[in-house]
Length: 315
Length: 323
Picture 1 (spheres, rainbow over the protein chains, first blue to last red):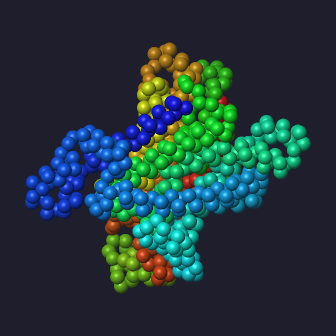
Picture 2 (picture 1 turned 180 degrees about the horizontal axis):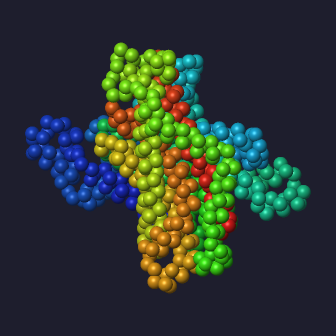
Picture 3 (picture 1 turned 135 degrees about the vertical axis):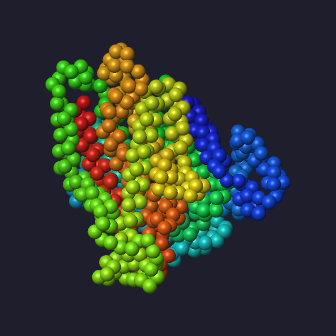
């Protein structure tokens, strides 16, 4: 377990190194980007800027400065939006967490029964139907799904607004919950497509296990075997999956938020990518990556707790 | 091995299960390697794999759709001549008609012809990026798995780190810095999506390097490079092929997403994602032909790649059972 923790720490450090190198060694002068092209005529101002923000240091010096800030909770400063990245995230991140969280819960509630039914009725019509369903939604980019939903449910039949809830504050999402329905449906459908395939193969694997035969031999009903034994065991890998799918879900959220102009973290990232606001991009990347590392660490721990067959032995 | 090694896409999960679990060395392998069994065996396993693949209707459909879309995009413009170079505002946003089967877009381009030209970009970038990602992933994974020890840990932690950053975020950062052209997009997508491949191949390499024939080769004085390229990579080829097919699906999804966000291929070139992003501006006008055809192309091409991948996986599992 200690080994796994150390691994997680090493991965987080590597993430910071990778994002830092990526963002700082790219051509382009931050001073010009912030002060505008006319700054070329004023080298003294550029030098002053570089000195104040540490750009005159070598890259490892800059990295160290940034890491030190990071450890003190300072994610950087967006010159573009004239706000600290941390304060930007404090308004945008909760919106994304809310959207992704609701979508995951809904997706699990729908995908688990679908996966079980598919596995039990393997190669029957129901199985083929849901296979088709999940393949279509897996193959369909989130933005296309979002556009189609807008086309049908916001324009053809104006039931829902075509835009997500607007407003700076976190509370704004609740003021217009109706506007959140289409983004939630988009992300949920995509997530179901990701989950139900795993659930199906997980149940299928478990159905062939010895304990199923034992339970049946002891006279347990089909229903009891399925719900008491197979379902429980099949859910264990889903815990791991949740941790692993976090990056995919964040990416899905970015697209969904962009389609619906929903001011979450993904939308912020996209807008700042267009404006080359690197401090913001860097801050968000680190937050997302750390969330993923923690997520998969928790998933691994959950797996070990839930499944006594799994033990972390030091090599 | 930590449990975190399950790949993020849903499909290759079975690959891991099928690929890694069944590779325990059997006596038959050693016999084949030593040349004691009659030659021609590999061909028959290939045949059986092919039969399984051809029996899979979805996989065959997938191949047909993919082949059709390749013909449509690359041969289509030779048959169906349209002006895709100069804007024609006299004929903008026309609904589908005899002269323009799928109408025209806001710049007066014929949408059917545009689909072909745009598809060339999506398919070229998608396929090339998947191939490049596979090559990089195979090398990285094979080297890490073969060398093992500290080097392996370090190389795999880099993979973990990159995997924890969503591919789309990473790609967006890079394309926001460099104005993307086709080669740059291929490079960016490949360099952000070789990670799952490297994990799969590393797993294979770890089990393959202990095999008798690799050991025998080392006794005979073969070096590490030879082990990796002549023995480990070819033996993992089934798993690699399956993964590469899913990579094509993912790479196409990524390029259309980037283009939809306006950070993919730049005008005057376009791809299906770019067409969609243009079409969305007219969503309120009811110009469905600017959205549906491009969306349809994206979905069927990605679905076709998934079907092919699943068929290949079943075929490869047959091969693995023979081991």
